[in-house]
Image 1 (cartoon, rainbow, N blue to C red):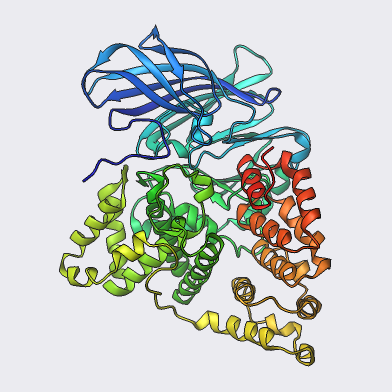
Image 2: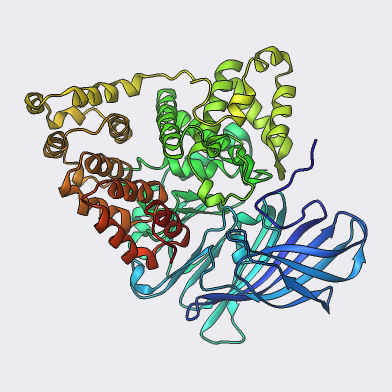
Length: 612
């Protein structure tokens, strides 16, 4: 098999393997930088090596010491999104199997793409600043010089100096704290991650945080203004963890804590080991959006334990995680609910394919990312096309009980490793060696390497979907004289998930007349709904129907939270509405300085606004 190359990294992981990081970091809120030393234990995988290349992005490198001896280094030319290679000349040649400790003194940039620094007024408490990181996919290099590729896994120990009134947390187990000997106003928090992780799972948060115990291995953390709400919302975490363990084996990470971040966090959740990051848009008040937590829990096996070797194989992380997430929800709620969620995912995939274009290679299950920014490539495709393939295979090979056996065996076989699709496919064929004839009927080329929708649509149980379809059809077919037939009790029997699906179905049709959305507001009062998934779809529907009264509400939702799933589509719909376009661009420019750097970059592209 051809040697695997990671197009998103400068590091040569066929020559060197980082085994451990020892980090000493000082968080400086005044300058908005992290200053520190990273000591990397690196193993030579070949003979006669004397040059080590690491990934960096916007880092200031002060000094490099190898095995106690100061050594020469140079930073290569900056690439537009990959950063700059750090080339270190080692004091002597290494033979295969030999380790060296390389210590790099450096500081981050105030514009580090992995970090968002929030002034006190942008926090819930308004008194203290806040810092959080988001390293996935290729942003760890803006915080630590490293082999920033999911092909490499390392353990880490970190000592982090922070103002003593704040709390620091990491993607690791807390290992105590002590006063900072260099500054009586600061303390040093210590962390240990003993399970090897890829660089993108390094995480750090510093803020005025409080916690509540919600299970034997789980605390929920957030600013005190949200902590009780979060504790209620995520109370089902332990039952989800136990269900996952029943399906795929023991949880190896020790703690499973949750952190609810400020609203600018760009994702629904991030599966940082020992400390899942979650958006406050999950706080619906009725636990209806907790499937995101089932997703992040699932990553403890699919992604964190068995990891895609490069981002071109991201579907191995996300497709399997969505599959396991839906199995958990199926066990906890019902098999009909699992199918209903799967059908909703098919619709999300259709949306992504329409947004990118059905011939865009970024809709391939395995896209080429040569000279492609992973943030620009990000979409629901690896999640939902990946899930659809696994769901289709489940139906071909004998149902969920049979396929869970495969999933558990796959995770056991490749635990603590990084893999590519060929590894997965070979294991699939060996596990189902008595069903090779069935597997050979799969159009692998179309599934893996062709753009657009999959070649086959799996079968879905329609029980929960039928009521949503019937109501959406009533609205799309309604004439002006039919509008009086709609009333609040239309929604009485629908769950939150079914209301989401009802609106998603309407978004796949031609825009409704403005009279229809005005009537819908009169009878259903969607403007008063707190659930973010319902609210975002409702506002998109209103803007598509060119209801001018919805413009300020859509702009408010697009800017008061920064989750890309909501913010980008809302901004795009507003930009496409001629009467809202100028105000939309002005609003974005006003809010851009306070947005997460990745969100600001992507929304700027959508609105055709030059980078800041």
